[in-house]
Amino acid sequence: MASMDFDWARRKWLLWVIAVVMTLFSMVYQRRTGPTYPVSGQVVIGAETVDFTLLRTYEIGSGAPVEITVADTAVQGTVIYRRLSSHDAWMEMPLYRQGAMLRAELPELPTAGKVAYRVQLKRDGAVVDLTEKPAVLRYKGAVPTWVIIPHVLLIFVAFLFANRTGLEAFDADGNAKKWMLWTIGVLAVGGFVFGPLMQQYAFGKLWTGFPFGHDLTDNKTLIAMLGWLFAWWKNRKGKEGRVWILAAAILMAAVYLIPHSMLGSEFDFTQGQ
Image 1 (cartoon, rainbow, N blue to C red):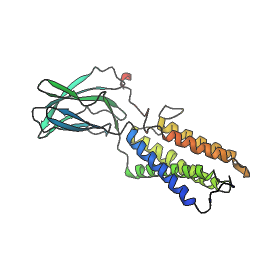
Image 2: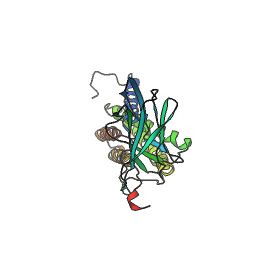
Image 3: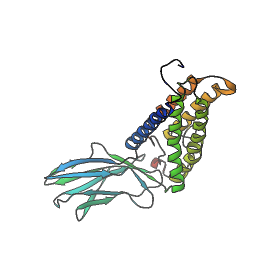
Image 4: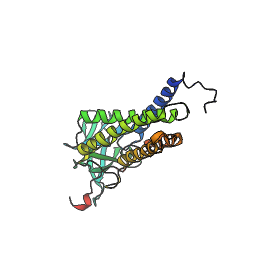
C-alpha cells in the first residue's frame, strides 16, 4: 500500500472529509428511516390537497394529538386505533373541527405502550385513507437535555472516529491504532453510559439488549463495541492487524444502517399489567 501513488501524509484532511460525509449520511438515514420518524404525505379529497403528518413517538402525560389541517368544512374525519400487544379490537373516534383543523387525541398509554392508528377523511360519501397501513406510535418518558445531547453527539462522534479509523487502516504508515482507541472510548461513554440513561428515562430500563431483551439499538451498540474490542485485541502488544481494524469499521457501519429504535421497548398489554 505504501507504494500506491497517493500522498497520505499531505491528504489526511481528505480522509476527514470522507469520514464526515459518511457520518452525515448515516445521521440523515437514521433520522428518516427510524420508527419514531413522523409519517408524512399528501392526499386529495374533494378539490383540496391535504398535507399531513402523523406522530410516531410522544411523551407520557397526555394523549398524543392527531391534527390534520383541512380548510374544507365539508370534510370530516375518523381515527381508527387499537393498542399493540393487546387483545383489543379496532376502535373508532371522530376528528372534531377547530377552525381549519380536524383534531383528536389518542388514548394516553404507559411508558413503552404502543398504539396503531390510521386516519380516514370523508366528504360526500368519498373516503380517503391517509396511509396504506396504520402508523405506530410509542409513548416514552421525558429524557433530560443533559442526557440527550451528549448521547446523540457522542454516538455520532464515535461513528466519525470509526470511519476515520477504517480509512486510516488503508495506510501502512498510518496510526489507525490511535484512532481505534478514540473510537472505543467515545463509543463506551456514548453507548454504555448515556445510552442506558436514555433508556432509563424514556422506558424505565437501563438495558434492553442481550441478554435481557432484543432491543436492536442496544444490541447493535454491543455488537459494534465487541467488534472494536476484538480489533484492539488483535493489535495488542505491538501486533499488526490492520485488517481487523478495517473489519471493525465495516461492522460498525453495517450496524449503523439498522434504523434506530427498531424492536425497542414495548409494553405488553396482554399480561394485564
